[in-house]
Length: 408
Image (cartoon, rainbow, N blue to C red; front, side, top):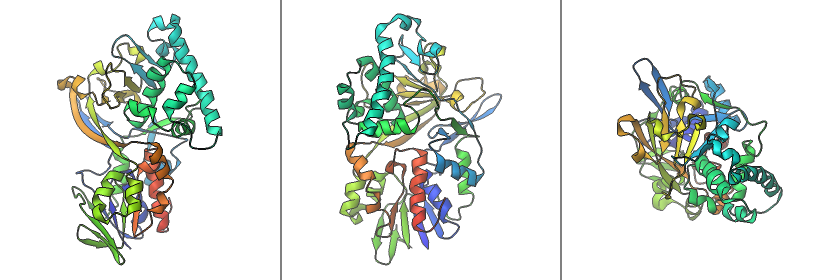
């Protein structure tokens, strides 16, 4: 069959990899590079060259089985990563959960009652989360559930909301309406409801660009810098910007898919795709260590910024030397949504990424994927159909590929 795949992020690339051996596949990508959030930047210093990731960074040995299968098929190597999370207000309050030394980075917290209550509330949260998982129904919003649980304000504002905001690159204020079950299911799935037997995190050797290059090397028709403006369907096929195909796989964000379909979108496509919106986030690759906690023992792989005034976006700095095991004469950081606070002389690159916003309506829409995908010669692939991560992109691609008889 002649199949158009629109979008060359993880979902589109994985779909193309699975389909191109048996079908005539054409991949359209609006950007100048394939990969989407798999975006590795080459940084040349005086003594070495470093491949630094700026979007997709890590995966683990428990929750990414399909992505690991894909890497194995591509013969792409990976290496251990250091995963830890911390919070800092840019001044005197800071901690990281990776060790006792990091947790009590500010020594006064050893004798601060509310700080100990914050830590105790995490134990209570993990216990109550398992109870929530055992109950049926949709469950409450995160804000309502936390209120019912009588958690302390420091735990909510300085631990669980920052962690959830950082995981989904979401506005901290959105966490109040975030489905509590959706969050605790994710935490449970990733071994985050306990302190033992956590998954082992890994990063791709040489940066995530390695797997992108391995896939694109075998594609016969990859069209970069070719944005698709119009997709229409009829009984005999699909027209993509005037070019005819038998079927189309739309592997873009949900809002982009609706825009390309335009007036040709069905009522059900508008309902389901419209239930999962996206929000932009600015990412800056830089070497300004002022964006890391003041005390070095509080440095973490993920460093969440507590700001005095809400900005409507998550604010976090990834310490890439830890995450990618980079041996360098400087600290490489990727900071989300705090570009103005970074020394301009230490900025290496700026990017804009978009992440799905998950709501109760969106969770319901995810369960109805089959109502629009595989219908009308059209298939939808994207990480937004699950939790929004690389594994979810591969899972969605595998579901589409199975329609054509291909399996990962």
